[in-house]
Figure 1 (cartoon, rainbow, N blue to C red):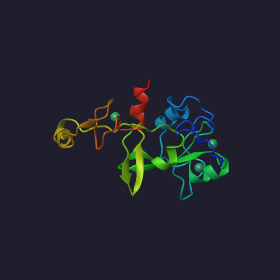
Figure 2 (figure 1 turned 30 degrees about the vertical axis):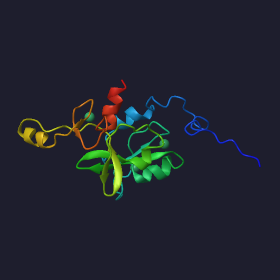
Figure 3 (figure 1 turned 180 degrees about the horizontal axis):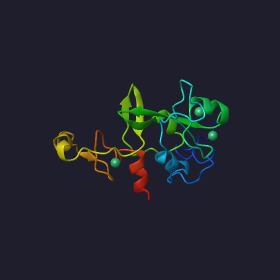
Figure 4 (figure 1 turned 180 degrees about the vertical axis):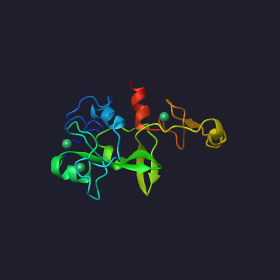
Length: 164
Ligand SMILES: [Zn+2]
Ligand SMILES: [Zn+2]
Ligand SMILES: [Zn+2]
C-alpha cells in the first residue's frame, strides 16, 4: 500500500528549463520583430520556394528560405512566418513553447491559431468610421487597436514595448 507523493501542480515547470527568467522576453524576439520577411533569397534566386519566411532561434541570422534551412539550420529551432493580409503572423503552435505569448490576441486563420508579429497601422481619417465600427470593449494597451477578445496586446510587438 505505497502511495507515491505527487508533486503539486505547476511546480514541476522549473526542473528541465534552462531559462530561469520566464517573464523576460528571449533575446531573439526583437530580432524576429524587426526582420523583413518574404523577400526572395539572394542565395537561391532561381528556386521556386525561395521566399525568406524562416527565422532561426538558435543562431543570429536574417530571414532565410526553405533551401537555406536545409543547408544551414537543419538542427536548429526554426519558425516559419506566414502572411495574413500583408502582415506577418506566426502560428501559436510554433512559438508557444519558446515564448510567453500570454496576453497577446490570437486569431484563427486557415484553421490555425496565429499571432501577429507587429502592430498593424490603423485606419485614420477616411477610415475613422471603420475604426468606430470595430469598437470593442477590449483594446491593445499599447496601440489602442480594438481586440476581439479580452487580451492585452494586439501583437508580440506591442507586448515587447510594454515590457520595455
Ligand atoms: Zn536561400
Ligand atoms: Zn540557425
Ligand atoms: Zn497593439
